[in-house]
Image 1: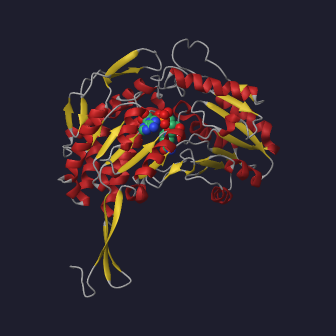
Image 2 (image 1 turned 30 degrees about the vertical axis):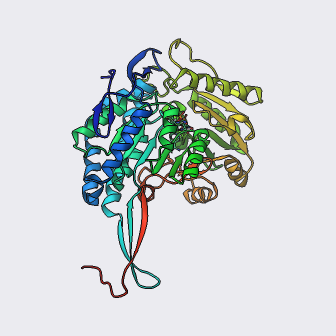
Image 3 (image 1 turned 90 degrees about the horizontal axis):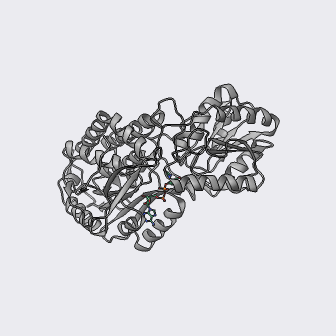
Length: 485
Ligand code: NAD
């Protein structure tokens, strides 16, 4: 199952790394090293870029849209065939609970690839149009060589977000997984071999931020697609701006779930709670600010407190567990420091706040609930990325929208109401890239997804996600030109 590796997958070949640097993958549950893999270095990036540039000349980028879509379908099916192994690997490397891994980590990735296969089959890659002076042909062509940098929280899902549109567009891609989660990428590389993807199209280079930055700056890269923290995204965006590289940035969030005064708590909370605590609270779209109407404040707080207390915590391989350990010791310490800050700034700790009883090993934090939170407090403004929720009171709907929008972020959000039209009206007013009305899924992985404000630039998924990997070319034709029928 989980085993050490000594090669890197570059341009579709298994090769000896350019250095002897290694990454130790540590189980967040046992705190023990479970595997060692090579850490890619600058020489490996150079080699991957060279292979990707060669692949641009063919054969893959010249395949028809239908043939490219067929590769995406084959890839999705081959991942599906190894879904359990992939889910178990991701649980082992980053602690995602088994109750979430299969669907949230693996089948969500195959669904992304299926979505891109469908979009590719119908996308207008060439369009004849009537121009100002005569007929024109508008073409959408591959953006060139792309680099995809992904975080550790949903590693295969994030790779699918980058690999799907790259293969759809015919763009060779160099993927850089996080050092915390390189193992699922090795299985993916085996799968890419298995489906016979033409050489050069994909390289997988697990490494840290310095090598990531070297990849972003590399003159052979035409487009960067980055998912990670807002701080790192600003840096990546600045480099791309300087070099005029195409860039997509999917960054942090601090989403607000607005419980309207007509909400039916018995129906809505069982749907809301998993989207607040999913993946151990390590989700960019987690609904971590819960806005409750003053008129029902005590009732909402009691119901949420009960749900948080009832959340099972423990061994992430146990299918009954909903919250496992955080990815790393530094992440656990970071989350605990936010809990201290919440208390010192005057929020009331209603549930949790420390290490769960009986779990002496593993980087656990109890599911934690702060109440009486003011939206100006640090725990309401900064992304904690752990199982920590804040309930904020509001007086009326207008104030709820104002609080939801009083954030540097604008990734996701949700509203909970018995009147769906009222919910849609609230959704129209909140400045975020994606929104749910009474829905656990605040994203749809076949439709555009991305952030307003500091949550990013650009969109993934759907036709918009494919367009982000394409350049547009206008070919002006003679006035009497007739397209072949
Ligand atoms: P991170 O920013 O520390 O790292 C993300 C990736 O970028 C890693 O592979 C890292 O090695 C690399 N990296 C970091 N600095 C870099 C630099 N200067 N140049 C090039 N590469 C660099 O984030 P993380 O802790 O791995 O992930 C958590 C963050 O990701 C959270 O903020 C979360 O909200 C965000 N996230 C966003 C989305 C989204 O779709 N918007 C999805 C998942 C996670």
